[in-house]
Image (cartoon, rainbow, N blue to C red; front, side, top):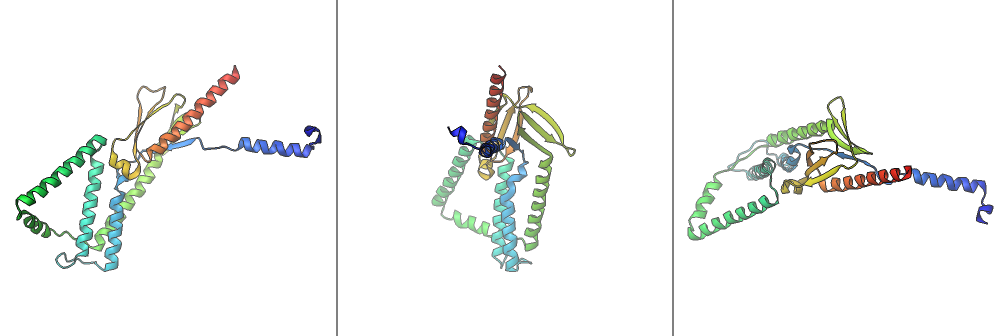
Length: 256
């Protein structure tokens, strides 16, 4: 009875709405994998250099006297501390076990220094007098030049990665590389993906890690280091690869 009462216009509207829903994609099936150089983790140093440049400029510290001015000494010391720590992180890899070992070593050194100060009470004033004589100080120009140089290097990094990145799309893995947009294709079905966190501090800074791709047509694995937010990328890859398997299975069953 319902079909008899329906008008042609109503049927056309229902059919058009159904086709619109069918054409609307739920999620994008294109995932970009961009391996970055180690310099990407130097952003804490850039932040400190920028803050120091602003503080020094507003304070009028264009010329610096380390014996009478405290702010330049404090900002320079903070900058050196962050820069050295930042470089230490990107030069060495710290897996989970190594990171725990480093924590225990630092705790042991700190406890040893504390015990020495208890046994030799005159040791702390001696160390304090030596450290008080070290007063590195930089002016506003130094921090401005450092911040600008690092910003230019970040711009160069973001431009360079546009000429070397990977893309998982439809049923294939694509490697875009070169200034002329050279392209190499790998089959995506049965692609196996492994994730590794090879540096706990880099993971803390930008969620970075390593993705290892195993295409079926390649004997050697494809290793992509310094993938930012690698956990999210792994979940997206799992979703897309799962949808590819479902599509292939439905196509084969339909043909039979």
